[in-house]
Amino acid sequence: MDTSGRRRNPYELTEETPVYVISVAAQLSGLHPQTLRQYDRLGLVSPDRTAGRGRRYSARDIELLRQVQALSQDEGINLAGIKRIIELENQVAALQSRVAELQSALDGAAAAMRQREAAVHASYRRDLVPYQEVQQTSALVVWRPRRQQND
Image 1 (cartoon, rainbow, N blue to C red):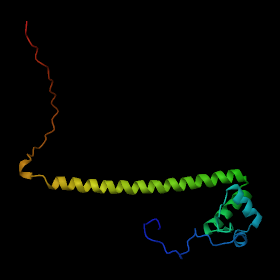
Image 2 (cartoon, rainbow, N blue to C red; image 1 turned 90 degrees about the vertical axis):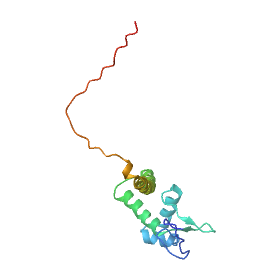
Image 3 (spheres, rainbow, N blue to C red; image 1 turned 45 degrees about the vertical axis):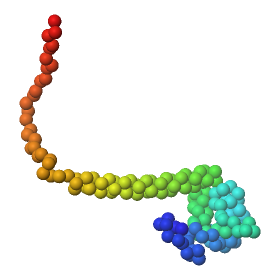
Image 4 (cartoon, rainbow, N blue to C red; image 1 turned 30 degrees about the vertical axis):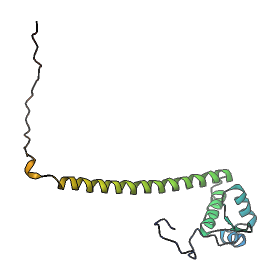
């Protein structure tokens, strides 16, 4: 099932579908297959595995390989730093997804509350509810309790 609750076609290819063998993934990412194996061992890019333990990369994995290479070569970040960056980006994405879920739940609860409030207001008997207009004054009223004289 996808995120909207519909059944996904099992033959539908998405960016997360693992379809590329290591040699094709290496060619698409511009890296050597041994580099891909090293990234897998370090946990930077972990492709899915076949029953025979062969690596299968998805389009998302290929993009991540390119990102790792760019961070390493262009920005000079070491592999441990890149791993931490990837972990933090994944955490941010998970938190953003959770915030969206909570916002949706909040919106639903607010709508339900407005409906209940409207139903309560609709049930009022207007002929029994007195209406008094409030007048604004600047008068000050001081209250003092009476003293009891029980002596």
